[in-house]
Picture 1 (cartoon, rainbow, N blue to C red):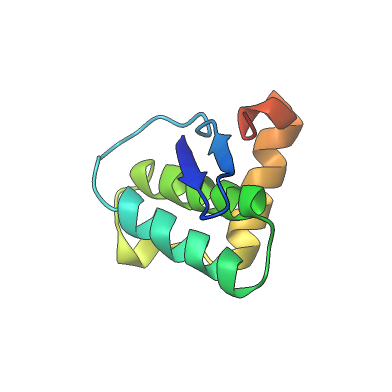
Picture 2 (cartoon, one colour):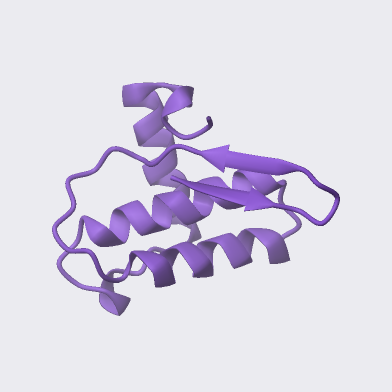
Amino acid sequence: GSAAYTMDGRSYSIKPFPVTAIKSFGGGDGYASAFIYGLLEGMEMMDCLELGSASASMLVASHACSADMPGAEALYTFIRQCKDEYGEMVARA
């Protein structure tokens, strides 16, 4: 999970996606890249957090790092599958 705090005093938090972690590295880079992608696309803060959390979860659950960095479609598929299996509250706190 993670949290974001904006200059206007708002705060946002998100729960992690349930995965079995294989390694602890790569998640931060995946999180940052997906979160920034969301910001650059003009997405709402919660959607940016969701993308970042999904990317980090996918990467710590894989054996590689840059070779397994998910693209946008892979992220959306992962998020949809997790929500179908666990419900909306998996991601949004």
